[in-house]
Length: 250
Image (cartoon, rainbow, N blue to C red; front, side, top):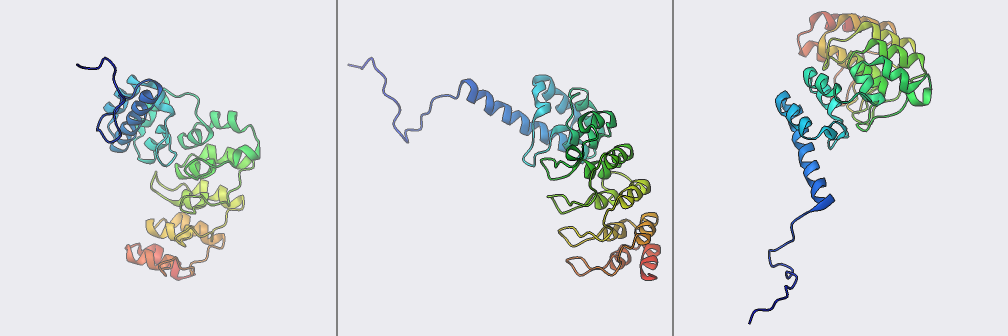
């Protein structure tokens, strides 16, 4: 005769109750967030739009590095996706606003307070570092006027805002941004975790304008990075003959 009662499954029996309620929703949200960031990295605007239509709350998600969807899209150079996400997330935090070049929002959040201007994002960068990296000149100017310190390095890679300003990953280096940072006390000889100075970064691109500007502010071309290379060595290896000559003559 069969029993009318049901015993709990024994451990190791291969049976487990189905996930339900808040835990089930949490798992689904995590899976969708993972899918969203994969679509952002891959530049799949259609998939990003579909996922945000399914769950508008995904605009507030963060990846394993602490990046929001807006920052992830900007870092990967997918400006069309960033624009679409921005349309769904008007209340940017100061780091997103700095990276996106929304100076009005940065002004609203910072309010001229140096403490607010010097915070650090979840991925280790200051608002000033992000604005410099993405070449947001007006944001850089406002943050410096509000007391942002151009000297501290990021927790991720040890890059100062000056390193970020001369990098070209997110657009051509802006001489005016570099000048503003130097005028406010940025260290032209600051070394990243790889031992590279801003002059090493400039040597990679052969950017003569910023090379000359850094040298005028006493950037030292004799400093070697962790690989034992001077800026001159890098410029020579990459075929930036003019930059190599300028570095050699100093």
